[in-house]
Length: 130
Image (cartoon, rainbow, N blue to C red; front, side):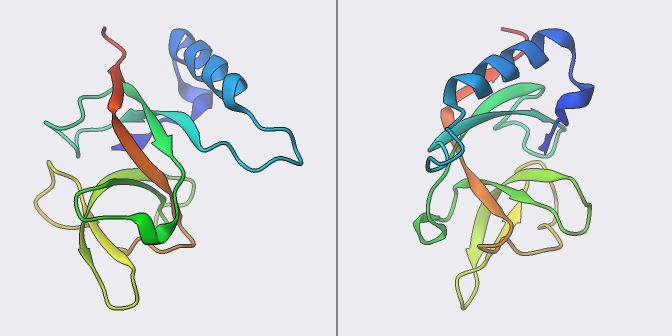
């Protein structure tokens, strides 16, 4: 599932995302908030995640990732794109292969400490149709 750029969101989602971001936005000198929300689009995580939806992302250490976690990461191949897919195989050295539950093949790049943004808190998934 891809993160919807905020500039292209519809007004109700923009309002929701803005309110959520303001509620958890840290002061410039503070540690980044442990949780934040993002809007997801796409079909790669069906049936686990039905989009469009807003999900809560938990910041955690890279070492805390476990097989089956849904990771949010920055794609190098597609600049400006973030992706949320399941971690399915850890490589020697600790990096992870990921795959969308609705995709036939794994992603073409590894999740590393440099492109890892956090993991989804699935109990907080809310579709925009609710």
